[in-house]
Length: 222
Ligand code: ADP
Ligand code: MG
Image (cartoon, rainbow, N blue to C red; front, side):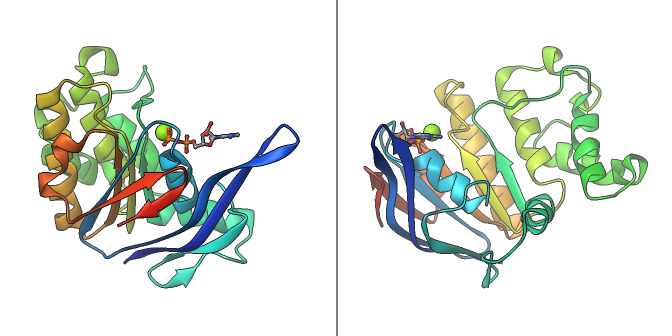
């Protein structure tokens, strides 16, 4: 399924006025493709992902997944949409310290009503896909930064989302590890046919993506 943002404007309160974080942003991401969004710090990248993730309701404009707009959905409807259709990879992996890699993924399956035991084969399959088949029983403190970020990517794919939103996944990694994570995201996007938005401020990883958009002061240009 595709992801489409149409004419999205988002403002935040800023003293007596409002700060425009997104200024009539439109973006179409077909299924099975990666669009990279690059821009300096404070340009609106995370705001764009928050709107696409339906975590924030814009002042104007719309978000559609598979052509179906999210307008008019209740809070519960949006939460269900996020659990079933949207995978989010934040900058920091935020893994639970007490759980093993495979358990991090099983917990997410539990959120959509699957029994953890039933989710085990898929969780192991995804860890294999991110190159961590041998690390399924390791806890976060037993993984490197790059490995934790790969668990984070696998976890985001656990419920087979239509849309994958990734916020600066390489910022805590060295260049080589960062490139490997971007390659992984590109490969899994094709394999799982997700509509992927990859936010980064690092242009050096972008050879493999399908399109690149630039954002400055909330204005997106293709
Ligand atoms: P980026 O991810 O590109 O660094 P952000 O989307 O986080 O940019 O921020 C865009 C602008 O909106 C910045 O000026 C930031 O300070 C402001 N901003 C972000 N989140 C909030 C918020 N929750 N409340 C008020 N202002 C915010
Ligand atoms: Mg950001």
